[in-house]
Length: 166
Image 1 (tube, one colour):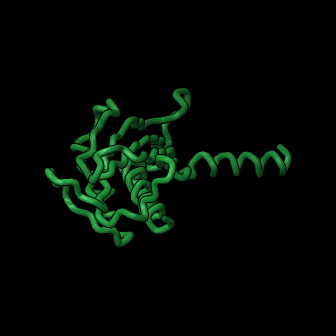
Image 2 (tube, helix red, strand yellow):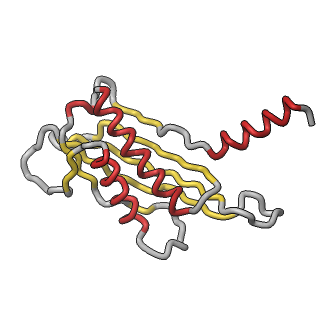
């Protein structure tokens, strides 16, 4: 194997375990900079993964709340207001997929390979309409719980980045 192909192989392996920045899609003209309060709704687990030993959706929600607070954003419980509330963004997360196990069925499992996709829909509380969503995907060779929490943290990081840039 040449030096060039060795370097390419190492870069490919590192890139496969490097989280990609979440995809953020906002309606045209929408800026998250106008939001001052964030309500994080209960997370839905639509992954179909049945081997979680605890309600993982609660853990994802708590991780997202903590990450938003880490960035200095005001987070409160979802309040069923009857009046429109300006400046409040509602985040509704869904774990759409999760997988843990060896990526290569023929090889003995030497590490745990995990993959998740966490989709968070963003709603303007004043109008009630969806203004965008964030898709966070993680694919790595470390513990499944860490992969899941990374997906949630990445959403919090993106919300904070969008708020501060907007």
